[in-house]
Length: 91
Length: 417
Image (cartoon, rainbow over all chains, first blue to last red):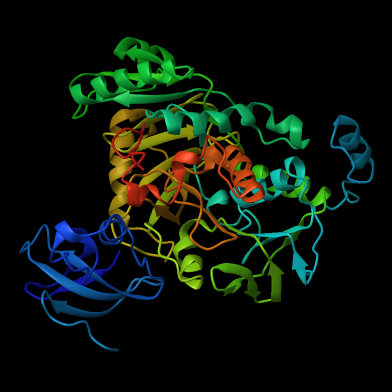
């Protein structure tokens, strides 16, 4: 349980948010040409990192907007929060 | 040779104030090379080693564990054992385990305190009723005992349940598997460790795997905190940390690791002599032999390895518990803890070979792995020894995420995964 600084609403309880899983997984541009392996990679395979992970969150019980987060999954410490469409921080 | 545990050995050791019991397993330094190495000394890993030694004549093997054996999810779960799964593949897998549970204490000469006190799953809405009836029929077609109970029968089987129809989620019925029940989780790890050790398996604790060495597509060994160990076969049974180990071999798995919480109350006199689970309101409860209520909460929705869950998850579970069992309203909770569970997209496990020769994974058990411990060990040992899955775990291969042949127990299982 932790506080999340929503880029639109400010600091709120994590309870208000919905985790959306790993970020920056790009939807295939030409789905019809994808092999089964590539589909599996897109749909199911996840990095599931222990350490700093980039992920999507949604302020479900607030502004309902999506945003990205860099969070250390080994201790739940939030490293950075950035908006959808922005590049992940390098450090 | 191990001394056999019996009433006579208990008596004999009582005479020397229980100070001369033989060690249950050795504490060896790792050898340079093994025929196989199991990564992860929880129940599943130790069971795998036990069956490799016992049924496949592989005694030159080791189990490496980064902490102490049974210190992970084996020691953190709510010890429920059942096999009333919907799909044929799951029914085969979990009932195989349940059948081994029934003779396990005798086989291991170690009391795992397996208690077939029955598991009841409650229905709280019309869809639950339909789903549970369907599952009862499916179970019976697979030879698994299951009965459907109406509200009165639920009340009769477990009188402390509030079956009043004016609560928010009234009890409309339920299923009962009488062969299901609970076991002592630590004893399962210790019993398998003692059995495996006796057959020559090296159980190496405080030994963390740092990297997996491969040449091309074949494994060569593991680098650990206690040095390099050469081996041709590596069986990874690392639960919540499976993805971390897979990453060392350059593999990606379809897993997400999330915190799952449980809690126990202060001990009280016997009040509930069965296990009651409810998927819809997410509450399940049983009572340990010490008298504590053992309560399972749900998972958080975010990935975390912190072994800490959110407070509102516990609060939600206790709300449901209090509505179903008003008699518990003044109970105090003693302990609450979290563990990290590795969840597959279809909520079914992976017991499989991988694209790397000699590397096998047993993972993805999510929130329900304890019940499968003996069966999982047996089938994973078969898979490692023969380099081919047993027919009971063939459906639980890694390739199902490519072929689309998922074993979708998410909506079908008796309780949320």
